[in-house]
Length: 134
Image 1: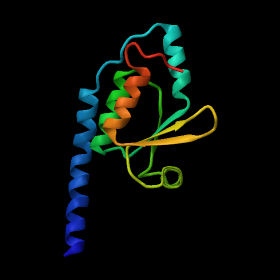
Image 2 (image 1 turned 90 degrees about the vertical axis):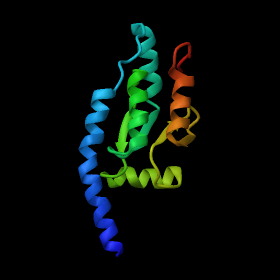
Image 3 (image 1 turned 90 degrees about the horizontal axis):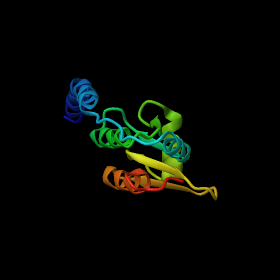
C-alpha cells in the first residue's frame, strides 16, 4: 500500500510541476524601480544571501516572486537536485526544509531563516520601499 501511495504522489508531482512553473512565469511581478546607485547597493547587500529551495515547491515560488518584485539578485540553490546544496542546508540550517534563506553576517556568523512568510517579511524590511540596504 505504501508503494502505491508513494507512486501516486510522485505521479501527481510530475503532472503538477510544469503547471506550477508556468503559473510562476505568468504571475511574477515587475521589479520595483531604484536609481542605479541604490540598485548597486542592493546588489552588493544581496551577495551575502542565498535561497535554498525546491524548484516546484509552492512556498519557494512565493519567495522567488517576492525576490523578483523587490528586484533582488539572490543566489538560488536547489536543495532537491544538487546533493552539495542539500548537505549545506542540513549542516548549516540543521534540517532539510525549504524555503530557507542563508544570511551571512559581516562578522562571519550565518543565520538560517525558514518559512516563506518570515523570509518575505525579512526581505521587505531590508529591501522594501524606504529600507536602507547594507
